[in-house]
Amino acid sequence: MAYTVKQVADLSGVSPRTLRYYDEINLLKPAEVNEAGYRFYQQSEIDRLQQILVYRSMGLSLKEIQKILDHPDFEIEEALRQQKAQLAKRRAEIDELLLLVEQTLAHYKGEEIMSNEEKFDLFKKQSWQENENLYGDELQEKYGEEAVQESKEKWLGHSEAEFQEREAAEQEMLVKLKQYGQAPQLPSDLAQEIFLLHKKWLEYSWQNYSSEAHRGVAEMYVLDERFSKYYEERVGKDASQWLREIIHFYA
Image 1 (cartoon, rainbow, N blue to C red):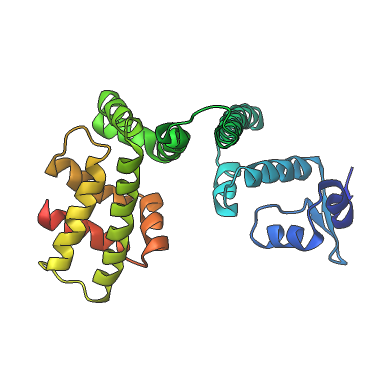
Image 2 (tube, rainbow, N blue to C red):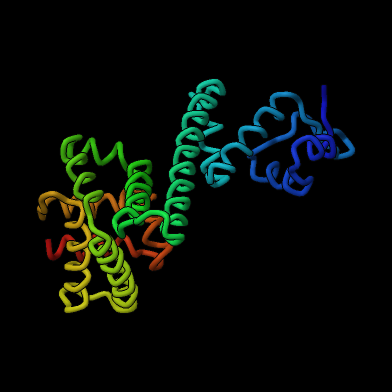
């Protein structure tokens, strides 16, 4: 059965304008475009649209979705199994968050006592999990499973004050890195301050600091676009390159 743009829009809730945009960027091409310019979709395009919407709901960008769907090894059944596992994980995280809210409400109603550590424990777990989802495989390959596990235990063992100090160190480092980008210079007092702040930030989760490992992290910032994007979004273009040069100079 062939579906028109309107029928697909009614079926999926995706606007005709969005469908045309998906066509323009080659994310979802119609099966056929007739001489009058009307688009028609078959079942395979309907199935692909469902996958696009599932991945969108999981927070992936259109570019990331296209890479996944167009990968030669993509199999819809395996993709669905992975999506199910990730959604179950998200549901568990939401359940934890709901429990935290209930406990906090009970605390303010005077029904139970909640320590400051308990108030922030979930957010520390979420922060670690986000990093593990993004970089876990690379970190285990580079430093070993035992080292990563030790770092995780140290991170989760932080007090509320230590957690806030780490966040503050990173934010200060980012501000200074932005200043440095206006007139990069090595050596300089500003560059050394950035290095020491980054080192301090790492030591909150590293069991043992080493200059070699620090330089290795700096290389990842440049070679892995996920790291580069992280710093460029917060500081500006070439931010990861500036940070790499600073770390290599002082480490």
